[in-house]
Length: 446
Ligand code: GDP
Image (cartoon, rainbow, N blue to C red; front, top):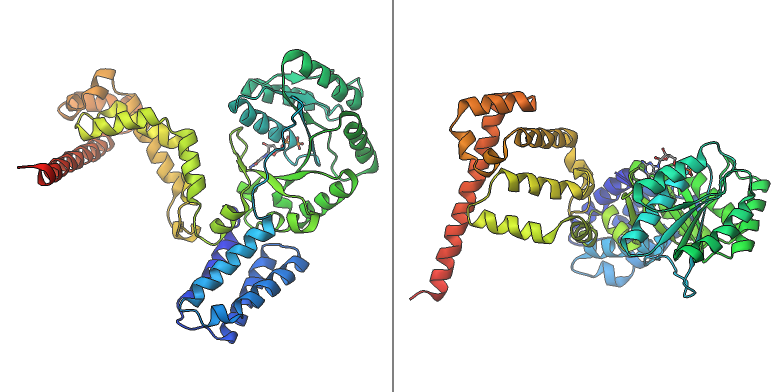
């Protein structure tokens, strides 16, 4: 999980304060020392840590906190506000042009995740009924053009290329004409990267910038590189005056130093984060929600948004009413599981629940839970359609159970366990239905 170490340390420190009725200056100073260490260990820039702790301490030592009835809560509120502030206060989305064609230029070092991010952005835009065009301007790295074409194909977004013999500036210019002629309203220009910042690269990027005058220049950086990412952001910003940053690989970044330092160092907001290799693993960066997640206060808004995006509401309602009418069968079970799965890996969903701390998962093998779910799916898939609709057929026949076990690579015991669970949930539904009836009778009856 992103920010794992920082989150658990900050939460531990603040929990100690919450447990105390009154806070003394000494309590706060001690807590601030721990906050400072936690931030430094998370690889946050030293100067930022110093300023942050100074600001938080000043606010916490004010009378409002010391004399409050819930001083611990007040301190948490202040830390939350300052963390949010540090990361940029509010989210900053893409600035679309009023001219009808929005030009977005992606820049960054090789391997940062530019090409992947170009695809993720294009997919998001396509889902919002925009008509993006991906532009292949990396003519140096072998296979870069092909990679963009593969990405484009997988998300059904066209890719503009002129091969690797034409200069990137000419390709970028030609892509504008192509977009206009083909009804595209967003250009996402994937540029070349290098392993390190070099003058040639910056010169080329400047030339592209001057020739196409982009609405956004977004720098893609790998959050796992910590302070290096911050230094890269500073250099690119000095040379190109970027409009925002995209942090990739946040899924693997247990420290979070880049996310916490970039805005303060460059003055440019983080607009999106990449949280996995798949095309839908992108999130708008919300500083306030991120601060809440770090402090274990959850991120209910993102959870709801995720559910809204992934779950087919009509189907969910159908399943719900079938459950209440006791018509719930294995087809519904399968459907409910597939809807759940669309929300993403279990660990990422759990992170958004308030009060949830990743340390609570110690000893719990989430991969195992997901494997169990896959097994259940295999069992249900090995049933005939008739059996899925009428589970009693399976419950009453040992030969059917044997066949299903063989087909799903499991054994009869596992089939029986699933059937038992299924029966138990059906029973529960029946009771709920009974309660619902009784409740209605009590209210409106006689
Ligand atoms: P580019 O050289 O900047 O175009 O980088 P690529 O888009 O080719 O990405 C480099 C590697 O990082 C690839 O293996 C990607 O699958 C991987 N990658 C990109 N974004 C993410 C992310 O958000 N999370 C994870 N875990 N991997 C990512």
